[in-house]
Image 1 (cartoon, rainbow, N blue to C red):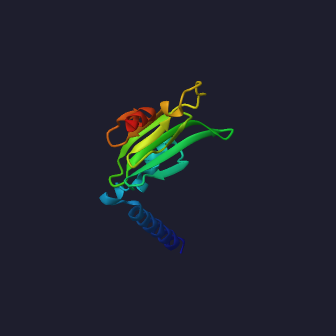
Image 2: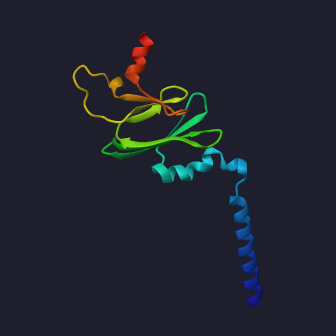
Image 3: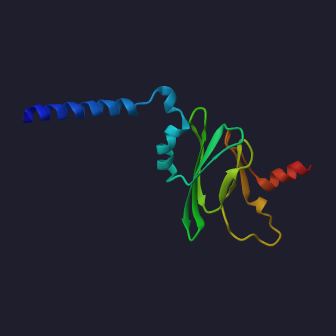
Length: 147
């Protein structure tokens, strides 16, 4: 009787193992979906505090900020292309902020130091194109647009 119970338990454990293995395997198409990259993103930047999808729904910004006394002490972020799941941009810096400026550019402030008299915040804000990594100061873009 005990031998019969042990064999049934062994069979049950084996079936559960096979069922779990089948459930956790992913197809090639699943492997490129952004949700399946979350473990890699968390490993890369830490626990995700915020997720922002651009207006074109082509890229997603995953943000991790270390908070102390209600203020961000450091920011880590990753941008992935939604269709392929590929990481197209990644950075880490002290304080500041990161957000979408438009469909393909991030607006990034890497510092929260006090502005000098007459200095505009846009002179410290970078715009980064996630498609080609080109960077421009927001103040430079504003000056070009005025011309």
